[in-house]
Structure formats: C-alpha cells, structure tokens
Length: 301
Image (tube, rainbow, N blue to C red; front, side, top):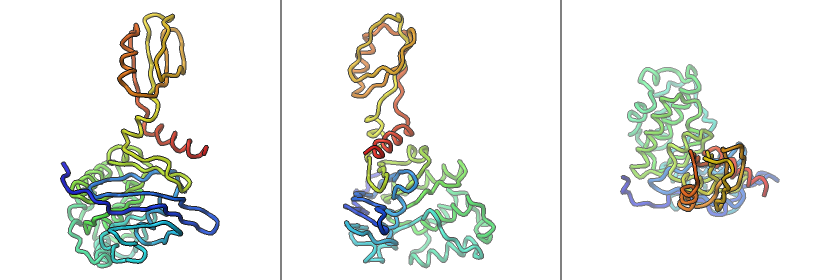
C-alpha cells in the first residue's frame, strides 16, 4: 500500500496552444500527483502530445499556466532533470550502441542511471542487446530503449507518450509491473495510450481529451458507472410486463428482453428480484464503449 504523501507534481491551468489559426489545446486543466498513474487518452490529433511537450518544456503555451515541481518548465529548464520523457517519435542515434546511447542520455539528465539494470530486467533487455548498434534494433527494441532512457535515472515525474507501442505481451507486462513499482515509490506518471488493456491495468485516474478540450476525467470505475449497463433477461412468461426505473427497452423477442439501464445498482437489483426470471445477465459498459461515448458526445458539442 502506498503511504507516500501525495503532492501535485505537474499541473496545467487553462492552457491554450495555437499553431497559427489552429487551436491545438483549448483551456486544458490537467493535474498529475505523486504516487499516481494518470492515463491521458484521446484519438489522434486530440492534443495529447502537444500537452506533454508543454509539460516537459519543449513547447511554450500560448496562454494559461503550467507548473512542474512548482516552476514553469519553459522558463526553468532545470526542472527537467526530475522528468523522464518518452516522446512518440524518439530520435535514437543508429550508430551508437544501446549502452552508449543510454550513457549519453544519462549525462544529459545529469543523473546517475540508478534504475537501468532493474528496468532492463523488466523489459527483457540483455547486456548483449545493449552492446549492439541501435541501427540493428527492431521497432520493439527501439521502443524498449526509449523507455529505458526515460526511466533509468528514476525521475520523480515520468511522461510517456504511447509507451506500449510495438511491445510484445511479455515485455508489456514487464512495463506495467515497472510502472506500478515506481508509482508505489511515490513517482508521478502520465502516459498516453491507444491500448485500452494498458489503461485498465495501470491507471489510477484517467483524463480524456478530444479536439484540444478535456471531455472526461475520473477513475475508470467512476467513468464506467456513468455509462449505461446492458441487461439481458430471460423471462418465465413472455407476457410479463417490465417496469424498471432508468431502463430503456432495446429489444424484446419472446421471453428474451434486452435493456439499457442508467442509475444506481441497488434499485435495479430489487426490481429484478421481483420479476419472474429464468435467467439474467448484467454487463457493465466496456472501456471501449465508455471512451467512444465520451468522444462522440464531445464531437456533437
């Protein structure tokens, strides 16, 4: 159990970023705290990468306020030594060996690579792999090297843009275990992903963005509970009338009834207990449905 005192490590308040006439971010509020893994989710072009680059001081916001460890990362580049960053398009020097490249990044961070050996075990990166030139690496190997350079100095804030991209399932499991460890040690982690299994396995909190605007925020359980449940009932008698508060009929064929339900679970269970049922199935909204419904709602506004 994490007993580390929780503090805000990085935050954006009303942040806007314009590229010419394009509004990449529009009044974005985002907070990442110590001992937290926050998922940052949205379709391509939603603004995730732009927000992350502002947080690490690679871009300057047009308006609003950004604070990392209490300072502006653009005006105070020294805060970057406490940040580990995996960009979506990490540029890796092909002629260098993996080990030499990690040493190079460690020198840039001005921090010792105290976590390198441990992270290599989690990511299944051998000494032999690290001795090879980076140009010989596969896409998955390059991704592992990118993750290693971000985590090797055990930064207080990890910002990872699509870290699971190109990783095989065993390595992905190792990455998940590694990030959980860092969270339990009080590190703050912000990561973006299109792989919803990663999100469900890792996230304490989720922030969803579309078109440069935040469209949803909370725990995965909280977000899912706001969505409709799917009910499939098998009645004893096809003529049975059904009245359940918060339920909407989707389909009725003979004794089989499909419903959509919104609202608290206890009144629903009480209503079901009063019906002459042969069988009943309650399905919570899938993670895909939760996100797609949020994105759809944002698109309609």
